[in-house]
Amino acid sequence: MGKVSLKASTGFLPALWIGKLTAAVVGCVSPSRGTNLSGKVAYRLHERLLDGFRGIDPDKTILITGSNGKSTSNNLVVHVLRTAGFRVATNLEGANLKTGIATTLIKNSTLAGKLRADYLVLEVDERSLPAVQASLGARFLAVTNIQKDQVQRNGDPDYIYRKILMAVDRGMTLFVNNEEPRSAALAGAGGRAIRFSVAELPTPGTREWDEPVTMACPRCHDQLEFAYYNLAGVGRFACPACGFSSADKPDYVIDSVDRTGKTFTTGGRTYHLAYDAPYFLYDYALACAVGTEFGLTGDDLERAFATFTNVGGRVEEFPAGGTRIRYLRMKQENPETLQSVLDQIAADDREKILLLGLQLVQDFVPFYSNVAYAYDCDFSRLAAPAARVEAAICFGRVNCYDAAVRLQYAGFPADKIILVDTDDPAPVLAAVGRCHAEQAYLVTMIGEYEALRREAERGEA
Image 1: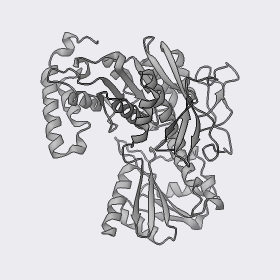
Image 2: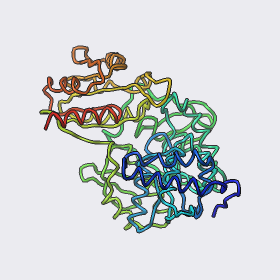
Image 3: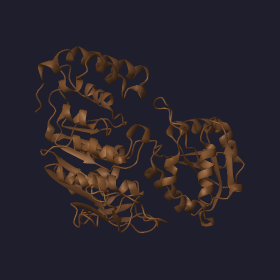
């Protein structure tokens, strides 16, 4: 068990109690804001708040971090443990900075600050990880991947790799992605490494690249070679210069996937698969690894996977007139998630509409309008006649023209590009209504999705 220093405990209890009071008030007035606010208030009163909590067992604490997939992985692991009958404290809503994690602990502790849970499972922002780990002392860390993400915040992936490395010590067990080079390179930093993996996926999971992805080896910085890709930048790799490579025999492997039957197979056992997009498979592989290492059986995993439902906002649908709009969420400034979305759209052989909103990012000043990350993606499959894209509606006051230029560079016909130079959702839906396809795919940030859905619901009413 971790010890609480006198310095850390000074002022801790008043901050905790005010945090609990804030959480109770917010829960009554505005539950949607309850993921972060009480921790933020408590932190203002006590800057070492995380150090004060008691009863946190490092051997039953796992931190999950990475550029992509950490929310779903966290939710899967939590569901697996809860289905097996354990009490789990977690931040399911994705509030993964220090204040969000503090809110989780405030809500799941006694008035004395003692954790009321068997396990503590936390999604943690990569930049916040060293500080969180310094306070909690977790013995388990899972790294989904380390890729390009939010460049104005995170810089380059190698910077994030170094930040994560700062949180690792020889007493930790690491869960690393066998097919993602930077995650896999962390394997030697901890005391033990557990590699989770997905075998080579058949078409359409595997995509043919016009040009290979150029990626430097995390160890010697020479160029890596990929035998295949399951996702952008994720697949069987090797470095000819230093020999660093994916492990030939990873510890946990999803061997096969049946998309029609909604199942996957690992360790000779078949499980239900609620979400079959390639990037979800790595989340399932990690959940199998964590669940098994924490002593759960195949029966435990089977019960959990049969009832898993992901937190909303990743894949949603809503009607707009005679068109069904399917929202595929991607992370702004993140080429890997954008590429996964483009691949899913291209794999649908129906006639379709593409709604592309590469919006202004307003997390902090200066606001970020750069869409250079879209040039790391392959749009050519959507531009091909076989994709059957009736029209591409580029919307958003700031970036609609930039998005249109990116489509034209990919060979998308100019007469099929519709520009909606506004953030008002009504003209966007009006443009959809002038098209004939019954299926549309929406690629944008969650705020714009919610605005479009509300406008569509008003129209349906």
